[in-house]
Length: 356
Image (cartoon, rainbow, N blue to C red; front, side):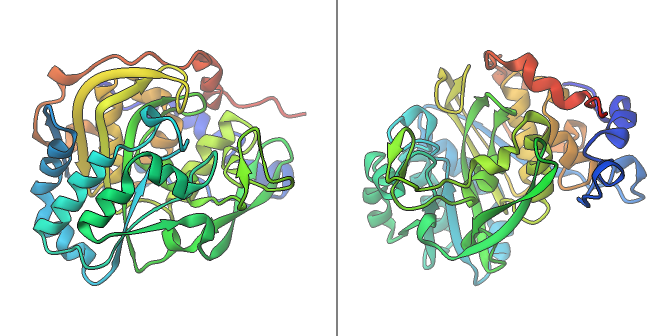
């Protein structure tokens, strides 16, 4: 386990560009509310870690300990299962249909299958093409779930920070993931990332909520078709971490499930290589789930900016010592993932820029 990095960095964080934008630019953005300044610490939380030889089975078993809690939280809300299909034709980078099946089988076991949608805005092409490529249609039919292309959803404008222009950037976000009547399940995949070290349950929701025009494809597609997802990155590693933190305050999963049956290492989220890991992590506390996944990947938590920001603001539990791990212990299942080639460049978020 790694020590909490926040104390050693508090001076930097409070004096950083992102906390001091008002002084230099007049731009008003929400700033982190540090845990050390908060009189009410978060209570201990539970995270399930399962290991096995069936992707669907470990997904199902990871959710079982939370059955009553999840059923109560869902109530009469619509359930939105959000997979991570950053590409529509690379299975290793996308949520597997067997993970979706494990989630749906769990929802069946708690009698919550009557209003379920599998919803996504794929990054590189038509969302429904990706669903078909990955076998989602068959699973959806089996459990009477609906498939939804979030690019065809209603739109709400949300602003993020761009570090090149020092201005707020409007982003089109789908209404379904912002709707308080949606119970959001992030069905993420365990992957390293070339911008924010690792992509897990939170990033799946935040970036997936930004939409693109019909006809957009990476490297081609309909002329003039636009994609709003890159705006979340804010033109740099500092703003990517900050935007994920800032948006998490209103846009996050209610239930996180992270499939590490076969993870991705290296130049993710698309170009990495496979890791045979055979684990699955789940929790109603998305930050706790992401924190455990970071540990399982052998990544130094101190290097993951947006998760540290979120923990400092009490958006979830980031302290392993305050978590009850259900199922398997963490230590025997840690595998050190190879990080992206530009790992050192990503750590610029730790260093304040020179402002003239």
